[in-house]
Length: 315
Length: 258
Image (cartoon, rainbow over all chains, first blue to last red):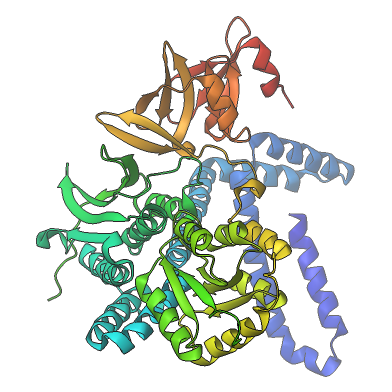
């Protein structure tokens, strides 16, 4: 209640500073401001009353009574305390629930926003095009232009197709489909097959019907790049790389199998895999997973399982 | 140059197109240079260089089996080395400071001509042993394993059902010794491995897993709370599993109250 008393005083001292000629026209304005301030303070007091523990209210009341007793006019203070208690009992619970709810909504909204931002940032990280790949590919095209121009042209087409879907700013809006992701990785594999020749035998085995399924961007590509970089490139004789997809127990499973060097348990597993795991957590909240296993014939099998969901066809 | 035998060179790159490109450019820039061999990886390059004894070796930096930096180490002082790379920013900076030459892919004819010019001048001298440069490069590019910090186990290979899975350590709640096996527990499944706890203690990151009992290793981040039972023994509760883990007396200091 003390707050209510200080405000008008402050307002008065404000107006006192102003030139006399302006005081007249300002009076109405000042009155309205005082009114607004009282309303704001009243609600602030109300909110405080709603959430304050009873114990604190009792202590404050007791102190108020002591003060009022010293001033020999306890009646208004008793009235105020009784009114406060009634307000707290009647409206306090509702108001405090409202406040909690609005705070929770705010937090949920912030969390959702944070997740979206986090996912966008992680996706951008995952979508980085390796300069080493780009320059090596350009060097190969340069050589083919002189020795085998039709092949050079074909390789360049694959590179354009790859860049078009791999560059974040060139990616189409909306939810990415498995079909898009497979076509991106196929372009990449075509390029790598020209460069690595018999050291890379790629195979893509994704049923047409699954290509319209929703699948997060750049995850398949990360698995494919890993299979080449850590599996096949370090192996002198190279090997096979196969992309496949199937439905297992209502979930879409996308596999990348390579017959390369095999997984090294001490290699931190790469930033790429950790990034996929984090993104799956953010996007699917425990309903998706990345599984790395060792096939009986050696090499590495990486599988991403996500809930099976079809992108609605555009009208 | 007339009285000495024709200079020889070896080219090492894991991609045939790139070997062809360097060969073609060298032919234009230095017709007398004889290419005595082409290698597809570092190991081959070293073996060929030892048998053919070329004056010059062109080494791609990224190659299977043995990379260009390791191959250069093996051949240091025996041949003049020219590194070839498409993109290795750090290496390029290092080359620019040193006496060793380098070529960027795709090889630009003018740049190849300049390299050949420098090589002609250098052939009269002994090949540079490149000690400082190679030490610097292997540290930064991972050519030399000896300088790397200690690596801990980040994945555990275990049988789950009828497949062998690689389980990331960050998914594991705890390891518990059971008879001849060690049980690996995650939130969603359990698996058995043959590696005993005392080996795991050495291989896992001590900042990630704590041993709380002769038979138990727990991932610190998975610990939800530590309580005491009626006998005063500490019990660890982990997130995502109802199983409780006992802390043996010799490890009880780990959970001393702050």
